[in-house]
Image 1: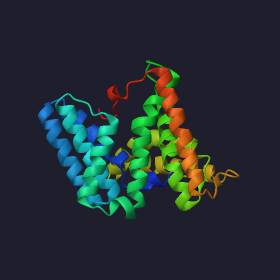
Image 2 (image 1 turned 135 degrees about the vertical axis):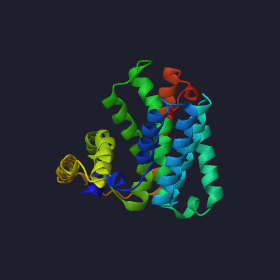
Image 3 (image 1 turned 90 degrees about the vertical axis):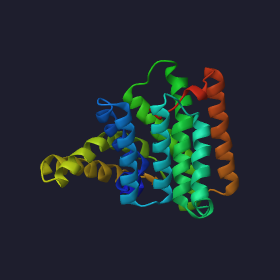
Image 4 (image 1 turned 120 degrees about the horizontal axis):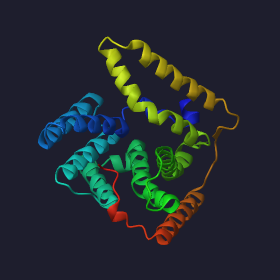
Length: 254
């Protein structure tokens, strides 16, 4: 059901979970001092990666979180392309086999590029200089990540979920709350709210997975994949040209 709905990423330790944890810790300790928030964030990153392991995905997420904390502490921003290239280079220096033998690494960076580069341009195209509504922003980021990972999913796994954007839209906003409630349940309190929220998420996953034709299994040749990538690039470049959007000013790292 998770494969059909494109939600397998919510049941594994991911950069999204780490981002939620680090942002919550930073906002809490920033009330005391910026330095304490920085140190606590580094500690949370180190602890999270030690517990989940240094897989390609978690290595990437940990480095992004640390660089994001550094930029926040010194009041700076990363150009998305620079951040993407820097983190890719560091992870490949740690383990060169990530680049050719780890699909998780490829999918992680493809989704990262979709959210960091494609999503801000699309958001500007539809909303201009106005701040996008939360639901609209989440939908655009979800679609952007899936557009970027689709060539890998089709070429390697021969599958494409047509309900994934809508399932993600209903599930992702409640992941931080689920993390808090499950943590509380682990400490011996509030077990019932955590169970009810998780059961609701499971029900949504099962409902979407039973939609007829929810999962397509196309067989694309490398030529078709290259054509798809070219079309996406042309459309994104056109949106950037029409909006005069400056990517350098955009950063999802707070």
